[in-house]
Each structure stands twice: as structure tokens, then as C-alpha cells.
Length: 148
Length: 148
DNA sequence: AGAAGAGTGGGAAAATGTGGGGAGATGTAG
DNA sequence: CTACATCTCCCCACATTTTCCCACTCTTCT
Image (spheres, each protein chain N blue to C red):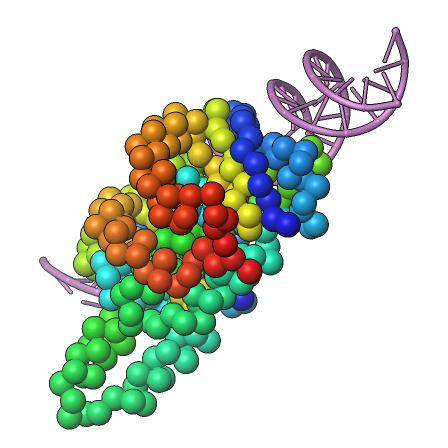
């Protein structure tokens, strides 16, 4: 169910990012949707998931609400359709790469309904910053500490 | 019931870790789930237990909640399914090994529903640091009374 | 001592990831 | 409108990684 896993990927000089084989198997067509994430990363959606998420946003948006208009600008407007080439790679536009500080070495995170593309250095720093809170949230869920 | 015990294990040059015979007997299928732990170690789950823990998190996750997204990134996304080969070994990915400083000589700790994989040097140091607090916590439970 | 089981190492085939050349499309300036 | 430059996509080739299988040693039990 969904796409999971964390992968080290590289983006070559031509802006091509090759999808790990495990993920290639989960894609039916040749298209994916790429847009800006809420953190310093890009989001990569399967078409059907993108359809669902974006429709939910668009349908719920009020023309007169500044907030929802902002969400549309940030999330829907920058979205672009990317196609997977025969070697299993997608091309990232230089403008999206630059806006999220992506360099050669990146992570691809499977987050279930979508994937996230992070620059390695950016993500390592982010994870470090958030680690204490993450641990606390995990414990709040009961984690594996519950004895059955 | 559950998996108990502390074992010295070695990880060979190809990243293969052989499970002690006592543990092999407790595994029904050929699959285990490997992910990052809260401390400097990896967690190795039995599939059914992983299913329970991860489902609890995923079902409760909101796309816009930073906390639950972080927990997904930290615990669920890095998870990988590993299969046990005919010699009773599992392959650890180099990225997970590196993130937890695992070298050749490691410990495998049975923690009931999951196992933990620690680098020997890292664990010895950790245990040293925590020993005072552990003793105190134990006394807080009522000394020789069982912890449920 | 012999047999069976456990742990370790290594080789070969297959799959995966990466780089680069070149044809075609697109765009720009003269 | 043409010539030139740029960008994109497609294809092939190479190197590395992964996977699978087999062989050997050491311990343990009979």
C-alpha cells in the first residue's frame, strides 16, 4: 500500500534523477506530478493521487479567501507533469531544483501517497533539528512500548 | 513469547548479518522489517508487529501536521523489508548501517516484539552512560517487583 | 569419531544506476 | 526566412551493485 522507503539518489548534470527499481515497479504509466512541498523539498505524486489531492484543494478553495489562494499559488501553480524515460529517470526543471537547494546527492523518501526529494545536506540538518520532537511524538503514539 | 536475549553478531563485507539459530526458530515467514530506532540502533520487526505499529501511525497521520509527517519521515519511510536467505542471513543496506555507525561487530538485542541492532562500541558506551538512570528507574518500579 | 547444524566467505550471473553522444525539436537573432 | 545556438529526448555502453548459490570451517551432540 503506497510508496515507502528511503533512497540515496543522484541528479546528474542534465537534471535527470533515476528512480530506484523498487519504485519503478509501483508506477503504471509514464507520468508523475512534481511540485513544491511544505518543507524544503519537492513532492512527487502518482497521477491518481495528485488528482485526488489537488481536486480536494481546488474544490474547497474560496476565491475570496487569501489563505486558500496562497495554498493554490504555492502548491498547485508550480506543479509540472514529468515523464519517466526508458532508463527510469525523470527530468527536474532547474527552477524547481534551485528553489529547494537540490544538488547532486539527494534523498528520495517514500511517504505513502507521495514521494519527497530532499538535498542530502538539507535533510540531514532538518532531521537533526527535529529529532527531539520526533522522538517525543513517537512515544506519544505508544510506539512499540505497549505490552500486549 | 516474543524474542529475548543478547547476541554477538558480525556483519560481513557485503552487509550480511546472520541471525542466531534461536531467533531463526521464532520467525514464521522469510521476511522482517528493518528501520531506524530512536537511539543509535536499528530496529528489526516481525511483520505482524510492524503492521500493527505502522498502521497506527499512518492511519492517524495528517498531511499538514508537521509532527506526524516527521514521524513518518523518521520511522516509516526508512523502513525496508528484508528477506532471510538460505543461510539465515539478512542484508543490511549500507545507508542504514552508516546512519547508525554499525561496523563488523554488533549486538543483537531481543526486545520482545522487535530486535535491536547496535554497534558494540556504541552500545557499550551507551549502556555505561545510562546505567545510573536505569538503576534508579528500576527501583522506582518497586525493586524486585516485575515490570508489566 | 562421525554426523548434523551453525556461521562465514566468496564467486558468477543478473539487475541496476550512470554517463555521454547524437538526432530531432525549439527558439532566437540577423 | 534562414542560420545558428540551445534544449530535449532517445539510445547505447559501461561500471557498479545486488542476488543467488555453493563450499568450507567450527562447534555440538550422539
